[in-house]
Length: 313
Image 1: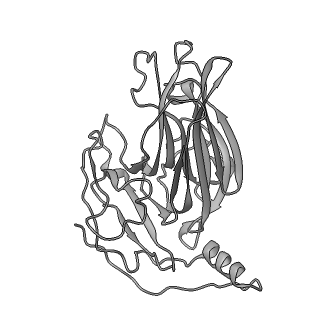
Image 2: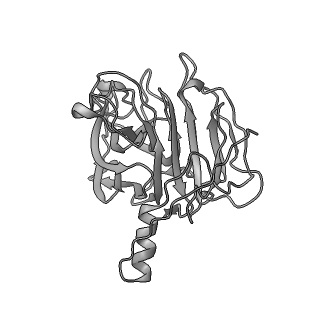
């Protein structure tokens, strides 16, 4: 296990709105500005693999109360620098922390990640999986370049969640376990997303959140995916996430959809029925992964609160 230094000293900001419920909600929204390290961290860590290309599930924690166990008690931890940790981060709330270091990436191999996954849902008409919870962003990977943050060529950012969706008639280099929508967090930059990162008191001030959607099943890169802006959130502030993915049969055609609400923004993704060869395909199964995935520069730290909830029918 790795040693983690703790620093005390937290500043409580409580805004009275005239009632207990309002005060609690405001306190939850504003939270306390943490001082670098986790406060009162649970001494329950697990060590994953350092090979970003190796998929190996392990127990998220070794004993104790797992704050994010409602999605799964297992974690896909392909990080060398960090282990999954959990604590209150100087607040009155409990958080599971997913941390990445770009130095752990290996040339020609998959990106570093630390994620949990729901169980798989096989295709059936009107069946769905829904995941909801509260998130805070402390950092997300960043790369110095002049590429707009709206471009698929931009390497900034870290995925906080993704929806997987297998289909039949897989073609050539298409993934056998493809993502159909990913939710990526990017540090907000000047000059319409091309300039330098905007800092406040030495920390990234805000993060922009996009959905990265396949234009055709199995698609990747700029020819197979597109970025859609969702919202901007402040660093170290709560925002609510709700992701639902389900199946429907419409006029005899099997369809998959994704509904999401992130920081109050509601949208639907109608997933393409075609693969990269323009063939009509059938969706086979789906699932949702959360945590932190991809970090091509610097480090990333994404927190998921202990109110994580998964519903399926």
